[in-house]
Amino acid sequence: NYQKGMSFLKQVKKITAVSYFAFSADSYIPYSPIFSKSVKTLEVMGDNFLKQGKLYEAMYVYENLRSSLLQSKSFYVPIKEKIENLNIEININDEELKEIEKQKI
Image 1 (cartoon, rainbow, N blue to C red):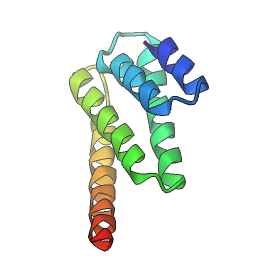
Image 2 (cartoon, helix red, strand yellow; image 1 turned 120 degrees about the vertical axis):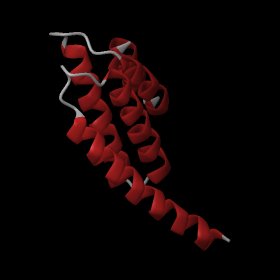
Image 3 (cartoon, rainbow, N blue to C red; image 1 turned 180 degrees about the vertical axis):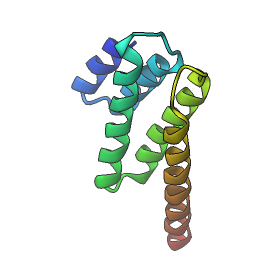
Image 4 (cartoon, rainbow, N blue to C red; image 1 turned 120 degrees about the horizontal axis):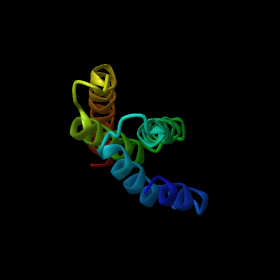
């Protein structure tokens, strides 16, 4: 799934790529680099969307990443801090999106 995600990313089908990277990050396999590559790719994609001012897309990436991390969370995967940081980022962006929606009305 990671390779499919990379393929879609190269085709500039970023939202589709997110789904594949998230699926790859759903399950942690000891000593496999795929989990960490998928997590890192999603982090970078979310950050890039934020830098571009694409809040909806960034939220989509961050929420998928958080869901994947929660599903793969275990004693062996030290991701508690990542999940906490994602929760903060999602809350900040959610408040910003609500303000944008208010201004549209």
